[in-house]
Structure formats: C-alpha cells, structure tokens
Length: 114
Length: 112
Image 1 (cartoon, chains in turn orange, blue):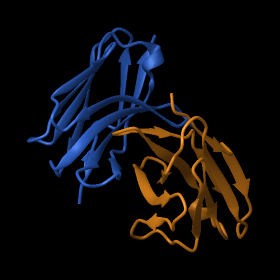
Image 2 (cartoon, one colour):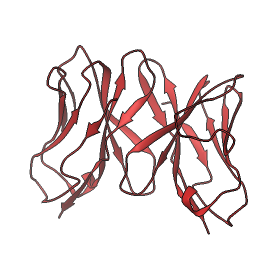
Image 3 (cartoon, chains in turn red, brown):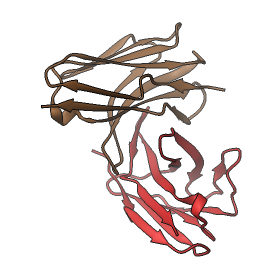
C-alpha cells in the first residue's frame, strides 16, 4: 500500500532554533500533502495544505512565516518550524491523499522545544 | 464550523467484551467519515471509511455505521483483544473540501 515516510520521529531542540520535518511518499506521487498538529489530549488540527510546485495554503491562525512548508517535488514535502519556542512543542504529522477518497499518514514527529 | 466529538475520552475493559465507540458531528454535510487507530507515538492507521451514501462498513471484527442525518457514527469492536488497545479517532471530510476534522479520540485499554 501507499506509504508516507516521516522523519525524524522525535526531535529535541533549543528555543530559537529551527527544525525541519520531512515527509516522503515512497511508492506513489503525492501532489497534495497535509500537515497536522496534535497537542496533548487535543484533536489533530490541520495546519496547512501543500501542493507540489505552489505555495501552501494555511489554516486560520497558523503563522505561515513560522511554519514554512516546501513541496518542491511529487515525493517530498517539508515543514520547517522556525525560531521554535516551547509552545511549539507538539506532535506533527503529515498526510497524503491516496486515490479517492483515502488518506495515508506518516508516523509523526514529536517535537520538544527546551 | 464542523465539530467532532468522541465520548468517553477513555475506556478500560476486560478482554473478550464487545465494544461500541461513539462519534458525533455537528454538520451533516459530510463527504465521508473515517475511523483511525493511533498507537502511542505513532501515526494513524485507517480502519474503516464510510462514504456519505453508505450506512456501514465492515472489516474483520470491526463494523462502523453512519447515520448522517443525526450526525452519528459508531465503531463496533467484537470480541476485544489486548492488541486492540490504542486510541481510536473519528474524522469527517466535509463535502467540497479535502480537510479532515478529527475528534479528540478515545483511548481504549483492553486488559488480559
């Protein structure tokens, strides 16, 4: 089946630094990738939708200058958390549409900012 | 604005019980509803997807039903096993959108 590989699975970084999270579609082309964030005991919330070769579409309340999304190829989308702060600590997960209407998810990245 | 609710937030049962997990949503104009399983620190595994025109879907010991008019879905797990322990998430896709709206999930613990 369609697999999305997400790396790293966890990362600890110092406040003020930037962190890049990668999602690769291994056996299919992902024209659209979705980035979600999940705080403890909360729902997964869509942050942004990225389309290959164009600018990402951000959900209301998500700072596009802080969460940089690049979808330069059909198999790779990246999320960079710039100048991370402790409040950005969360579980980040990507998803790609597979066929209609299914979705496949990456394994997620646990970000801890200290 | 679509809201998805899953109650209770957690459930602990002995092995072998038949379980019913509930999901409700406020806007009935959905395209489909999906149930996912999430293991600790892991990604999501799709369990069942029900199109808005369907009433139920079955996969092995799992059966999901959808009553769109009342904004409800249930996931039935037959003969629960310790390996079923996980967080179960319900998500709806709105008509005309690719966005999934998730509930907070229900943490299930099946005790041997």
